[in-house]
Structure formats: C-alpha cells, structure tokens
Image (cartoon, rainbow, N blue to C red; front, side, top):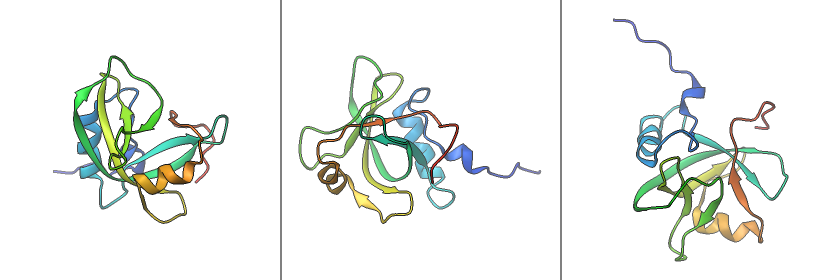
Length: 128
C-alpha cells in the first residue's frame, strides 16, 4: 500500500473551519515534522507571521461563536485562547515565532506590550 507524501501545508491549523479537538489532534500528529503552525497578526495592520504551535489543550468551556481574536485567559497561568468555528476553545501554552526561540504563553503575552493578536487565513505572500 502506497501512502501519499505528507505536505507541510497539511499541518496548518485552521480555526475558521476546524474544531479545537481536531486542531489539538493535528498538533499531536504533526509534532515531529513539520510541526503545526498558524499565521498570527501581532498588532493592528501588521504583516501576518508564521507561528509554530508547540503545546495546546482543549478547554471544556465554549463560546457563543467564533472570533479571530487570540486572547490571554483570565488567570496569569492560562495560555492564549483561540475560539474555533464551533465555539470550542483551544488553549495555546507554548509557541514559537518564525526564526525565534520557543516561548510559553505568559512570556508571549508579556512581550505584546498592549498589542492585539488575531489569527489570519493563509496569506498570499508569506513572511517566514
């Protein structure tokens, strides 16, 4: 039986069309190579940047509807909360900006300096 080669584009997390459980399982499946990733816009109107997502968990609670905002949880120990298409919440605990070292969610939030973060669909021109 021949299986098709894995394409790195298959590892992209798509919260606008997938649930938190599907994305969490995709992260686990692609953890070694190529690694699951998501494009985030840090600051209003900035260029989307590719972030490798390293550690997540699915939360029990749900939101009313999807939003493209990625926000910190209510407690300082919580990660970044990503609301998916069905209202399920994926909490991002560790992530790695392109060409940088991995950071935990708290360090990432501390470095934002008040800027907003939102996810974007795969941009036409990608900055790695």
